[in-house]
Image (tube, rainbow, N blue to C red; front, top):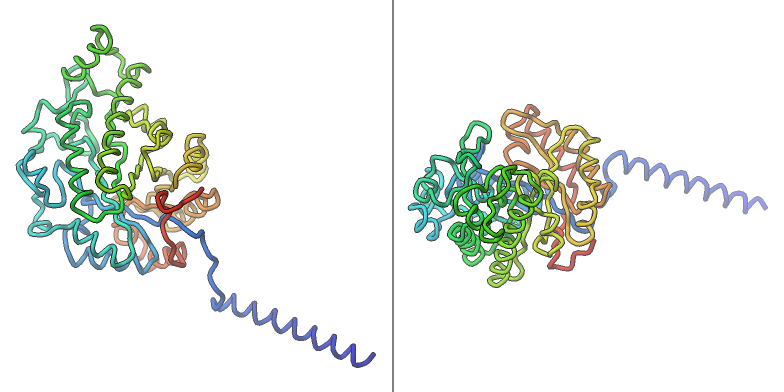
Length: 400
């Protein structure tokens, strides 16, 4: 009996000791970090607006290395912006008169080749982003060379103000415009080992536009000579234009897949009601038709309740069943710092709702353009992404 009591006492002490060791390990950080999902998109957009990361080879190299160290796995570099390509383009040379953006930092370089090569060396997927879509600066060479490519409001005005800049929009219904944009896309897919191509709402058209002569005549041909409705928000007029863009996207999708079937088509739009009503970009229909293989929904909200509400809409939840749907989170703007605590909270909310990952707009505000210390920001991302994981890929066996 005494021997049995002694044995039980020894076992009890052992259990207590093991428990104490476990607590000490957790407090000291020796325990393994909690594992995240098997796959998770950890992306960032890299633009030439308020950033020089693409304009200096050594800065770009350091950025990609840093992103790898912090366990990112995807970059979305802009390749079409301000009416120019950011890579040497024979297509652009023919149409615009310049093969490359005149920015001195791009001269003599192939930025896209650099980022694809180095990105892949760092284990990062590279998905070029057509940031401007059908939009161009009002004073650009593209707009001046091809005024018949531009669309307008009912009163004939063309300029569409975005911030401090005057823009114009190429007519997405015009066959020459369609051929030009598609040629740029196919050029990239054919020449570079990219993992995908990404568009956003700029692949649509502000709904107040579409009253140019070409589009009006096209509409009249299909409506027994009737003019388009005077109200740009007329439901039937919205639908007709949106469906034309859908048909064009289907053509682009087929052209991409004919070159490289494993290149994915990624879309980074606003929520559906904004995307469709204001930009004629009906991503809900695009997703249903299988034209989108990755959705990164822009949810740039400060209020957490509003942020969460955007994630709960039926079209978002439906898309999650078919393709990887991730959340675009604002990490800041040039004149607007977003605290790391807000970023962490939104990432947590996205994970709790089983989204496929997150992507941040934009690179420079991850830790460079911020009111917080760069080291503190980078430590925050180390906490957000404690380990390396692969990105979800519909064509590589992803299942929701």
